[in-house]
Length: 398
Image (tube, rainbow, N blue to C red; front, side, top):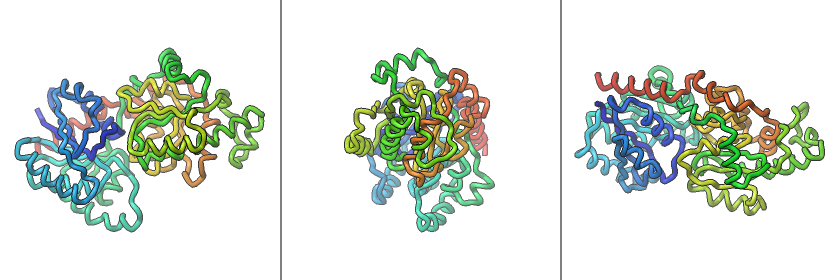
């Protein structure tokens, strides 16, 4: 049996990368491979510790804040000590931070004989000047990597050299258990009753609170939606749609009072709350916190919005599509995530008005069978887990 160590930068808040790794672990053949999970500081997997340990895995926390350069030096030393007593066949790095990846890769290369997988999950956040400076680090990383993986072509180019991204990187689709998100009207009714949503038009956003997820922008979108809804009730929405012409009629449900539903936790949550309070919208925003099972929350929503400033793939968009929701995102979310043809990608420069209008005019979908399209498009977690296992076993044989 192969032993694989999954390393990501980590935080206390469960995010998209952690969800992908946990789903892969749940569906991979654990008679042939076993995962352990390591994070420099606090684990993202606290809610799932019992499940992970029950499947045979271990969670390791090194107690190091690696966000700054001194912390990365401490991480290198801590990994040296860790690898003196822990042996792995494969080490799989999962991070969108190039310097973090390079430090970890260097330690793995020097202190282990494991095959090194580096998995690109992000596609933005560096300025043009930093992008130029990143080239030496990319070459350093590639020289120590046995297998390059990425969730999308843009993520590959962000972490690896152009040659590596084009010629050697394997695109591993961010599969999900689509059936888990299959819409159920009874679940929707129960969860909406629990959250006190009654007849509201609910726009949702799932994921950790962080700068790149841009949740503050959604408070501005909500404000614009409320103004447009007044125009909707007056029957004059087409003339108030952020200057747009020849627009479709609004979703029949869009005149119901709008509310935002956030699922997740993170470093910028307090700032988002403060903005909602400042704009007089706190009563129209629900902070549901981190949830072990997010599927019922998607069923509660009427539309989904992801205004990220950058995104490696956008797995939450895929989950929303599987639940039968129309999806509005920034144009920083890769087109790869639009597997059902229901995503509108808008430039953030267009402002919150355009997002508000897109959400209120998004077509209402038939939700019960939407999950099937995810599997048909090749984004099934079983397929992804099988592909990853084959890559592990092939690398271990070399």
